[in-house]
Length: 197
View 1 (cartoon, rainbow, N blue to C red):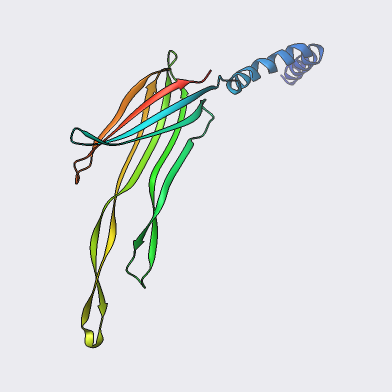
View 2: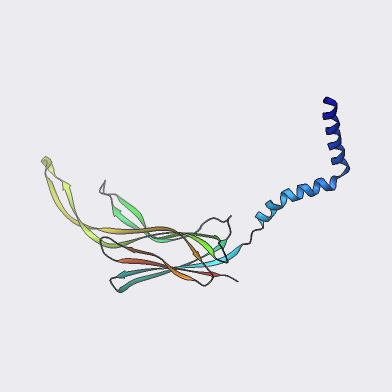
Protein backbone atom coordinates (compact mmCIF):
# COMPACT_ATOMS: atom_id res chain seq x y z
CA UNK A 1 0.00 0.00 0.00
CA UNK A 2 2.87 2.40 0.88
CA UNK A 3 4.66 1.61 -2.39
CA UNK A 4 1.54 2.41 -4.41
CA UNK A 5 1.13 5.80 -2.63
CA UNK A 6 4.82 6.62 -3.08
CA UNK A 7 4.72 5.63 -6.75
CA UNK A 8 1.65 7.82 -7.33
CA UNK A 9 3.33 10.79 -5.62
CA UNK A 10 6.46 10.29 -7.74
CA UNK A 11 4.31 10.16 -10.89
CA UNK A 12 2.58 13.48 -9.98
CA UNK A 13 5.94 15.17 -9.29
CA UNK A 14 7.40 13.94 -12.55
CA UNK A 15 4.36 15.20 -14.46
CA UNK A 16 4.67 18.63 -12.85
CA UNK A 17 8.37 18.93 -13.52
CA UNK A 18 8.06 17.59 -17.04
CA UNK A 19 5.16 19.92 -18.02
CA UNK A 20 5.58 23.42 -16.50
CA UNK A 21 3.48 25.10 -19.25
CA UNK A 22 0.47 23.07 -18.07
CA UNK A 23 1.00 24.33 -14.52
CA UNK A 24 1.30 27.94 -15.71
CA UNK A 25 -1.88 27.57 -17.79
CA UNK A 26 -3.78 26.26 -14.79
CA UNK A 27 -2.53 29.14 -12.60
CA UNK A 28 -3.50 31.68 -15.28
CA UNK A 29 -6.98 30.16 -15.54
CA UNK A 30 -7.40 30.50 -11.76
CA UNK A 31 -6.23 34.15 -11.80
CA UNK A 32 -8.42 35.15 -14.78
CA UNK A 33 -11.64 35.88 -12.78
CA UNK A 34 -9.64 38.08 -10.38
CA UNK A 35 -8.16 40.06 -13.29
CA UNK A 36 -11.60 40.46 -14.90
CA UNK A 37 -13.05 41.75 -11.62
CA UNK A 38 -10.34 44.41 -11.43
CA UNK A 39 -10.95 45.61 -14.99
CA UNK A 40 -14.71 46.16 -14.58
CA UNK A 41 -15.92 49.00 -16.78
CA UNK A 42 -15.90 52.40 -15.05
CA UNK A 43 -18.41 54.92 -16.40
CA UNK A 44 -18.24 58.61 -15.35
CA UNK A 45 -21.67 60.07 -14.54
CA UNK A 46 -23.13 63.47 -13.74
CA UNK A 47 -25.92 63.32 -11.17
CA UNK A 48 -28.14 66.39 -10.79
CA UNK A 49 -30.57 66.96 -7.92
CA UNK A 50 -33.15 69.70 -7.61
CA UNK A 51 -34.81 70.17 -4.21
CA UNK A 52 -38.00 72.20 -4.68
CA UNK A 53 -40.12 73.57 -1.86
CA UNK A 54 -43.82 74.35 -2.35
CA UNK A 55 -46.27 76.23 -0.16
CA UNK A 56 -49.54 74.90 -1.55
CA UNK A 57 -49.25 75.37 -5.32
CA UNK A 58 -46.70 78.15 -5.02
CA UNK A 59 -43.04 77.30 -5.61
CA UNK A 60 -41.05 78.86 -2.75
CA UNK A 61 -37.50 77.61 -3.42
CA UNK A 62 -35.64 75.61 -6.03
CA UNK A 63 -32.16 74.43 -5.02
CA UNK A 64 -30.06 72.69 -7.73
CA UNK A 65 -27.00 70.53 -7.00
CA UNK A 66 -24.70 68.54 -9.27
CA UNK A 67 -22.06 65.93 -8.46
CA UNK A 68 -19.86 63.62 -10.51
CA UNK A 69 -19.44 59.91 -9.74
CA UNK A 70 -17.85 56.88 -11.34
CA UNK A 71 -20.18 53.91 -11.77
CA UNK A 72 -18.17 51.03 -10.35
CA UNK A 73 -18.56 48.70 -7.37
CA UNK A 74 -15.28 49.78 -5.79
CA UNK A 75 -15.98 53.50 -5.51
CA UNK A 76 -16.92 55.24 -2.29
CA UNK A 77 -19.63 57.87 -1.85
CA UNK A 78 -19.06 61.26 -3.46
CA UNK A 79 -19.94 63.91 -0.86
CA UNK A 80 -21.29 67.46 -1.15
CA UNK A 81 -21.48 69.70 1.94
CA UNK A 82 -22.78 73.26 1.90
CA UNK A 83 -24.19 75.32 4.73
CA UNK A 84 -23.84 77.81 7.55
CA UNK A 85 -23.21 77.64 11.28
CA UNK A 86 -26.16 79.16 13.15
CA UNK A 87 -25.66 80.39 16.74
CA UNK A 88 -28.06 79.00 19.33
CA UNK A 89 -28.16 80.19 22.93
CA UNK A 90 -27.69 77.23 25.29
CA UNK A 91 -28.81 79.04 28.45
CA UNK A 92 -25.82 77.84 30.42
CA UNK A 93 -23.31 80.49 31.52
CA UNK A 94 -24.52 82.72 28.64
CA UNK A 95 -22.96 80.24 26.20
CA UNK A 96 -23.60 79.89 22.50
CA UNK A 97 -23.59 76.71 20.47
CA UNK A 98 -23.22 76.69 16.69
CA UNK A 99 -25.39 74.27 14.70
CA UNK A 100 -24.63 73.28 11.09
CA UNK A 101 -27.53 74.21 8.80
CA UNK A 102 -27.47 73.39 5.10
CA UNK A 103 -27.46 70.49 2.64
CA UNK A 104 -25.48 67.23 2.73
CA UNK A 105 -25.51 64.87 -0.26
CA UNK A 106 -23.80 61.46 -0.45
CA UNK A 107 -23.95 59.68 -3.81
CA UNK A 108 -22.53 56.61 -5.54
CA UNK A 109 -23.51 54.53 -8.56
CA UNK A 110 -23.02 51.03 -9.97
CA UNK A 111 -23.90 49.41 -13.27
CA UNK A 112 -27.43 48.02 -13.41
CA UNK A 113 -29.29 45.86 -15.90
CA UNK A 114 -29.60 46.59 -19.62
CA UNK A 115 -27.63 49.85 -19.66
CA UNK A 116 -29.17 51.35 -16.51
CA UNK A 117 -27.35 52.57 -13.40
CA UNK A 118 -28.23 52.01 -9.74
CA UNK A 119 -27.79 55.31 -7.91
CA UNK A 120 -27.59 55.38 -4.11
CA UNK A 121 -28.31 58.75 -2.52
CA UNK A 122 -28.47 60.16 0.98
CA UNK A 123 -29.88 63.70 1.06
CA UNK A 124 -30.07 65.66 4.29
CA UNK A 125 -31.25 69.26 4.47
CA UNK A 126 -31.79 71.60 7.40
CA UNK A 127 -32.82 75.24 7.31
CA UNK A 128 -33.85 78.12 9.55
CA UNK A 129 -37.59 78.54 9.12
CA UNK A 130 -38.18 81.46 11.48
CA UNK A 131 -37.42 82.42 15.05
CA UNK A 132 -39.20 82.42 18.38
CA UNK A 133 -38.88 84.85 21.30
CA UNK A 134 -37.44 83.28 24.46
CA UNK A 135 -37.88 85.05 27.80
CA UNK A 136 -34.71 85.67 29.77
CA UNK A 137 -35.00 85.40 33.53
CA UNK A 138 -32.12 86.35 35.80
CA UNK A 139 -31.95 85.30 39.44
CA UNK A 140 -32.31 88.04 42.04
CA UNK A 141 -31.72 88.23 45.76
CA UNK A 142 -33.87 86.20 48.18
CA UNK A 143 -34.73 83.52 45.58
CA UNK A 144 -36.84 85.86 43.50
CA UNK A 145 -36.27 85.99 39.76
CA UNK A 146 -36.51 89.01 37.54
CA UNK A 147 -37.63 89.19 33.94
CA UNK A 148 -34.66 90.47 31.94
CA UNK A 149 -36.20 90.68 28.46
CA UNK A 150 -36.43 88.42 25.42
CA UNK A 151 -34.15 87.21 22.64
CA UNK A 152 -34.75 85.47 19.34
CA UNK A 153 -33.97 81.76 18.97
CA UNK A 154 -33.99 80.13 15.49
CA UNK A 155 -36.44 77.38 14.57
CA UNK A 156 -34.50 74.80 12.53
CA UNK A 157 -36.34 72.36 10.28
CA UNK A 158 -34.83 69.09 9.01
CA UNK A 159 -35.38 66.66 6.17
CA UNK A 160 -33.49 63.43 5.38
CA UNK A 161 -34.00 60.69 2.80
CA UNK A 162 -31.98 57.62 1.76
CA UNK A 163 -32.81 56.03 -1.57
CA UNK A 164 -31.65 53.70 -4.32
CA UNK A 165 -33.06 54.32 -7.77
CA UNK A 166 -32.42 52.98 -11.27
CA UNK A 167 -31.79 55.53 -14.03
CA UNK A 168 -30.69 55.49 -17.66
CA UNK A 169 -28.62 58.07 -19.53
CA UNK A 170 -30.63 61.29 -19.93
CA UNK A 171 -33.45 60.17 -17.62
CA UNK A 172 -35.02 62.39 -14.92
CA UNK A 173 -37.32 61.15 -12.17
CA UNK A 174 -39.15 62.59 -9.19
CA UNK A 175 -37.78 60.44 -6.40
CA UNK A 176 -39.18 61.91 -3.19
CA UNK A 177 -42.19 63.97 -2.08
CA UNK A 178 -42.48 64.86 1.61
CA UNK A 179 -44.73 67.22 3.59
CA UNK A 180 -43.55 69.09 6.68
CA UNK A 181 -46.09 68.25 9.42
CA UNK A 182 -45.95 71.71 11.06
CA UNK A 183 -45.71 74.15 8.16
CA UNK A 184 -47.53 72.03 5.56
CA UNK A 185 -44.85 72.85 2.97
CA UNK A 186 -43.98 70.15 0.46
CA UNK A 187 -40.43 69.15 -0.56
CA UNK A 188 -39.83 67.39 -3.87
CA UNK A 189 -36.55 65.94 -5.16
CA UNK A 190 -35.95 65.46 -8.89
CA UNK A 191 -32.88 63.46 -9.96
CA UNK A 192 -31.36 63.24 -13.42
CA UNK A 193 -28.41 61.21 -14.73
CA UNK A 194 -26.09 61.86 -17.66
CA UNK A 195 -23.26 59.66 -18.91
CA UNK A 196 -20.14 61.75 -19.54
CA UNK A 197 -18.54 61.06 -22.89
